[in-house]
Image 1 (tube, protein in one colour):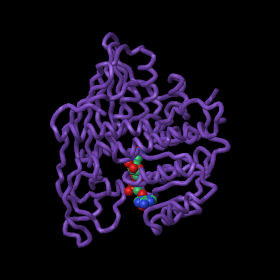
Image 2 (image 1 turned 45 degrees about the horizontal axis):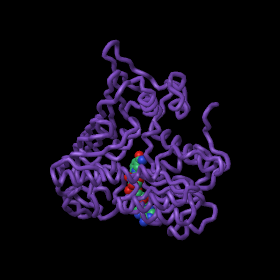
Image 3 (image 1 turned 120 degrees about the vertical axis):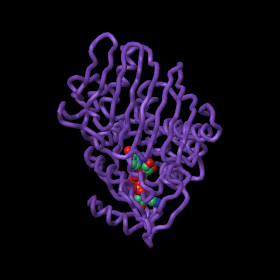
Image 4 (image 1 turned 30 degrees about the horizontal axis):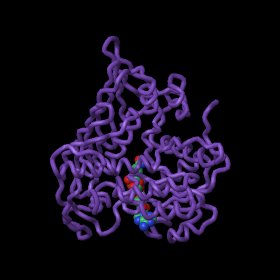
Length: 393
Ligand SMILES: NC(=O)c1ccc[n+]([C@@H]2O[C@H](COP(=O)([O-])OP(=O)(O)OC[C@H]3O[C@@H](n4cnc5c(N)ncnc54)[C@H](O)[C@@H]3O)[C@@H](O)[C@H]2O)c1
């Protein structure tokens, strides 16, 4: 049976956060037929602007007002990281489904509390938006590895690099320490890479050895808000900016040990010129290797020792069943970042509209996955401070 493009009978949604990613949620929700009832932002005037751009009828003044709206059955939390915990907790306590952006929270005390709250309410969806899992060719990698045709996995390596914080004039709430792990690049983009690596090979990360670097120990902080990916927010000498000390990392390199002796290594950087948003991952196994690059997401490299290497172009007709199920366009018709949101939301809302008595366990990234990511972040922070291997608690 072909996979659905729309969800019939879904409850209404509200989105918290109208910055970079909140509107991506709104657009993807509309693509799957979910009515977006309203938006809650940090500042009402900015939320009004975002709501107008998105043709959203309602701007909430507070989380109380949002939770008082009976039309809202699912809340998408797309606010800065430190707000995820209090907001996701209140959404769950209100009896609603929640889809939270990554990282789930800023400490394992918070993620453990959210995880057990979610587990005590199994009828409510509690998802974390690790959307990279929903690129069809990533699913193809997972399927190939699970099938055993690639042999035993030996190592997983790669990187996630960007350039939007290259200059000291670049500023955003992310560069400020959260008072917990105080990680930035690792928490922001490293958790995507680590979630993907564990998902693809089906094994958790057990220990880490990390090196962190803050190249810009001072940045210019603008007086007003600075949007994600908006470019230099302030210029040297501008009366609207002041120099502040920075302690969060611009770069990290991390060695990894997974279950079953699988080794790994990745690096993250937000100061690599020209790399706009590039995740690469390569898996070496006893019978072959696979490599994928998020900036060419419709192509998978298949490495072979005994024969010629291959390039697999994404085409549902050529994919395994789980990968084909999340690939809605024919080969040659590129699918990318917005499609991963659509596919993840289809997974979540499909589960929500299923008959609760007949529901299968969720296949979307759960609060348990979000908890694991923050535990790894804490191990990375401890490892970098101590200069040695640290186990994930
Ligand atoms: N899955 C992904 O690919 C992806 C990509 C980007 C960001 N994210 C995650 O999404 C979240 C938001 O990131 P962003 O890049 O959109 O940030 P952003 O700064 O562009 O937007 C954040 C929004 O939250 C609003 N906000 C601030 N305080 C608030 C409050 N008290 N209540 C409600 N809203 C409030 C701000 O007004 C702003 O509109 C982060 O957790 C980030 O890690 C995920």
